[in-house]
Length: 299
Image 1: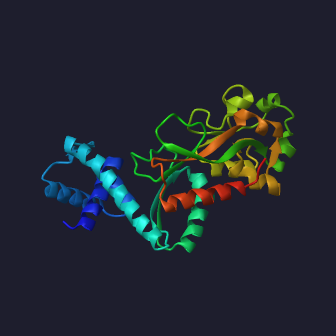
Image 2: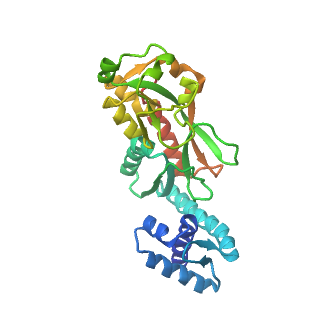
Image 3: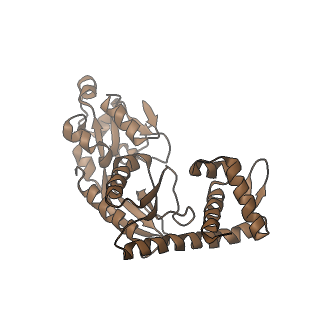
């Protein structure tokens, strides 16, 4: 098996291990599950060992599979680093950049940034995982993960790229009908929008002293919640990078602005990585994302 072919097989193997199924890896690769299964079988034949225990309900790594997974991640990372180093020696920026972040953040900031970088560096390739899950750069073979909020202690290296502030806001149409709250105590008389999943991810407890009990809308997507607020459905408590432009153009009214200055309304936006020295493409991505975040409306 040629070295480049072996690297492809290892890549498929790590994706199957990550997803826990042939079908999950196939979706990420855009191929048929049968194709992934054949390549795993070929790899097992080449290594003369069984890598996965197969059953009708689950796919799990064998001892040999777990041992290979540790080395496979290291080998693939080393190959990626070598490609990027060679490209940088030639004055180019390329290779594969793998990033995970919240869906709304990715659509608002990461996709535009990727388009800008790709125009300048055509050989740059990107895998962007838009997910609500808490991804791990090591386990999921990611170069970076964008995390918002408090960080758990870990061996990962965090770079703070911005400070997020949560803004209480509603549309002018809603306020004309329901009135404008003058204090947090009056919010109990209003229609409130809340996050569907997560333990008070929006921080309503910091405003009300307790989580929202009777929300008129619960949703698991920031962009959808913003649209509901702009449409007059109720009062939202959302990050400034989500609703800042709407406040500036008058589509939303910033309510009780003193709330945004409270320490509890401010959280960090970080990029987490496993390597102490980021590859050139990741270093550029971090620097450019900092600039983009600094240009957003600040309240």
